[in-house]
Image (cartoon, rainbow, N blue to C red):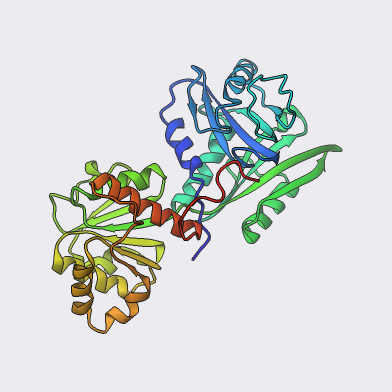
Length: 358
């Protein structure tokens, strides 16, 4: 499976930044030590009215970050701030979080016309097209040098050392800290490799597809919905998804199936589901989910004939984790959880590591 990115906060921030009416500040974690809620590369948007999009801690630091962001808004100059909660005294914040961690955060202006917004948009466009990108956050050096840059570059070319490091990060798909000197002044950057988010194909746009697509879009997965019925292939029913109208028999011709980590077949029309499964059997899609009981799955597999042999190792039917789901919403949750585990390379089960773990 190609490299994927499950932290889709970049897409979430870009959506909000396109709607924000006033000036904003972008907060980015550039380094951590010990146990912290988020790690380097996590971002949060702070608007002038105090509205937050994203989280950098479990709510422990956000109030103080608002105050510091106000200084950035007034001055228009980026600044670095640091928090260390590894002491039992917790004298500064008085929150007794017990996080046992420390982090450095860059705060920079991110309103319309800012270099930060241009960098995020450039990276977001590359990722939406299925490519990769890098974001370099310069957090040590002259105040005028602090800030986020993208690779591919947005606007002015990157300094040679930074451009070379970004190229290496994309080639190796590994994050990197970079220290270098420019004009005899030391600088430091955190360079983050960004892979595209997971793509999921939903074959069938009935009413129960709506909560599934909504759940996947809440995760900022890229979703394509296809249906042969005009009454169901309605973009307004699936905000944020790519909605396609066309016969099941033309699926492979209409949809680039090599782009998806998973497909969910749920048209509730037996002949169409069989056709979808036949196309997916001949595709490289690694995970094919089928809605419905086991008896229906066996009937469909019998109709596929020899093609069923190619599909069987990848077919999950009934699709979704067993969480006792009975409503369309809970079934959607079960399916989304299984697809998230697939993208993360996990088998599911009780959590042994969550956000904040070292």
